[in-house]
View 1 (spheres, rainbow, N blue to C red):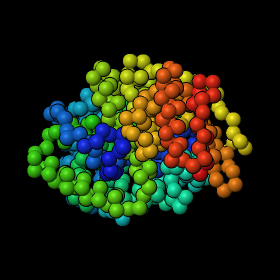
View 2: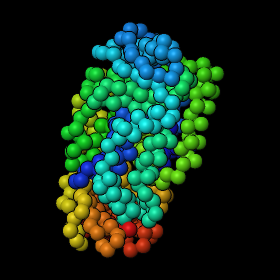
View 3: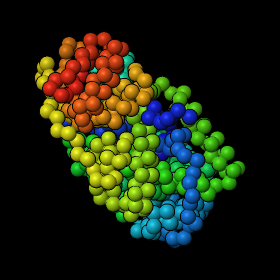
View 4: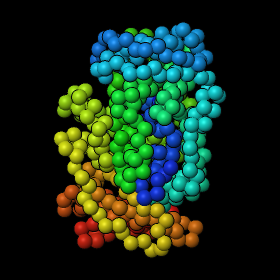
Length: 412
């Protein structure tokens, strides 16, 4: 999918909910049900890269569009050639492409969404328990608003449909097409529809999403590198307009941060894969994608052989368990970074070795208890120190070291 959203707090300055799943999988998956390939074209992307000259002939595409069909067909052929050249092989089959005006696009997007309101409510309660949502924030409404205002395009791997928002072939629309065509190419060669990953009791879905989106971001970056200065100016104007639209919407910052997460972190992951072994290493990653957010935040824990998380026993709840899962290294970072110095938050996330969390209800509040392991004793000390500093801004939160595991309890 392609969406234009504000910078993630994970950057250096210039970052259905599945029950028994993970924080990242839960929230990222519900934002858009086709979120694996939903288009969040980021304002934080690089200024391009070197692109190879188009060479592969792509098959003809059929179109339903607000732009002249012949013009769209020609643009899709040219951009498909570019994507195929970047990825090293031609497309296997035609991809249906549609270019739709704003209202029609939003209707089509919502028809593709499959919101599980009970699961969204669970995610909302978890985010509120750790202070990432305020008491009056409505996650369902935030999800709908973020989708309507921020999504620029999506590719549906179940129906092989590619849909882009726009009424003319502007640089922004062409960039979105490159992003989504990359998803289509990857789907044809590696199959992006993977229900087993969505249901996995870990962060596999997030890891796969970051790989998929990071790969599309780097191909569109290479395409941008072929543009003239005038074309880049127009592209920045398109991006600025979309960003203004998103920023003017009343969407909690955490929703935007979680939306951008697979793109920002996935881009760095794919860059590291390319350095390690070029296009072949990227292709191999689709066969054995990352399974933790640590693999994505710190690709060295994945590229040279995936490091498994430290086994952590589920902490005891003070009531019937409502939800359980993995909070993840990225969950640690996103929770801490607005409350303690950014470097301390990053250091704590880097020391994450594994975790489990449980939630329960206490009156009208949700409580969460998280047990974190570090990679070594020093990491455990840093995790405890970081969470203790965070707890100073979280009334009633409790942080302690239980037998080498940092246990955090919070209600909200």
